[in-house]
Length: 91
Image (cartoon, rainbow, N blue to C red; front, side, top):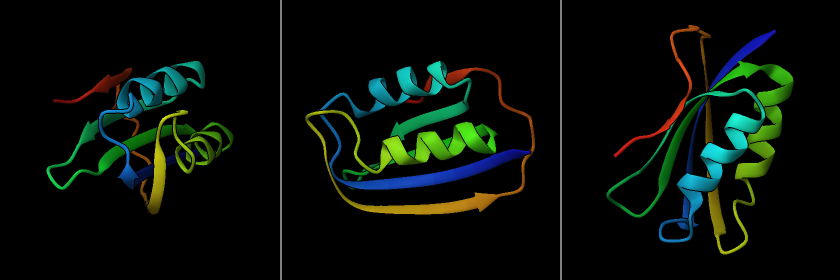
């Protein structure tokens, strides 16, 4: 089963390698999508992959990398599209 999820993470998530570590984790799990900083200091990401792999990615994002401190975690499930290629850091 395939899944598509958009997440927004707030807290100390910018300046702590959140995007780079998200990309590394996503690639290791064969997740496709992107991650980007938002102007208010949060991070947004879009993940597509198998339900199992996306669930693992979601679990990782709830904690983030070692230097991060996640305060809130919003998740929105979207219809799977299969239109993503690779996993990029969006600027």
